[in-house]
Amino acid sequence: MSANNQQMSSPINALRRRLKMTQEEFAHAIGVTVSTVNRWENGHIEPSRLARKAMDALLTQIPTSSDFSEEPLALSAKES
Image (cartoon, rainbow, N blue to C red):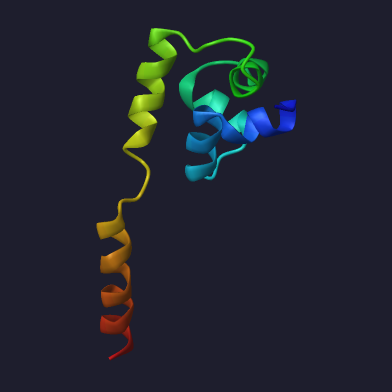
């Protein structure tokens, strides 16, 4: 697997992309360096337990499907 394919399949990369964050934003949000995030995404190192807890906290910021289903109702209510 090439480094680029490995990066795209990283669960950390997937989480960061779902949050619509750059590596820099993600690193700042969980209190690590950009190079640390890059090494995680490239499979060079694994996150610590403390870093994983910080990532778990970020998971609460990902919209659920129910968040999306309510949005059109709010838009249609504004239009009437």
